[in-house]
Image 1 (cartoon, rainbow, N blue to C red):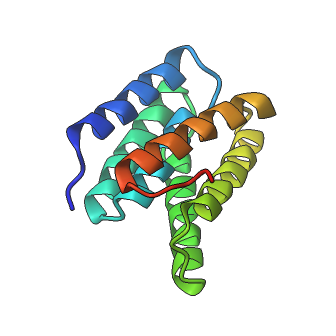
Image 2: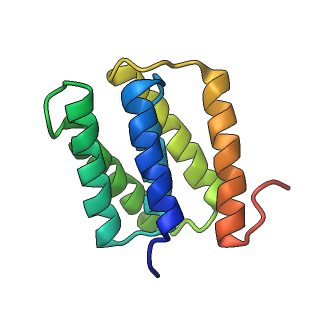
Length: 136
């Protein structure tokens, strides 16, 4: 399975939005969603580069954001394999909780209603790409 160019453009757009206009961890959220859809090495490389670019844009220590993203990828991967999860509702909940933790650690906005809207959109995107029913 290869990464679709439209999704890569979405990550790049999130990078520029987060670096300039929005105080939400869009790159973190979209990169975790990308990794769940396409758990490949190229995804890790692209997300690592996007995180490093975000660190440069935010004038923070280079490498902290990619390190946290990779650690979250590893935790989610172990959780998926350990409990053999194929239900994206549980994975979306894990993404929701991890993005709130990431937002509180790195001084982003933590308005819960905005996160519900973002992850509601992710539920629709996941159902479109995976052709599975998420909301019953």
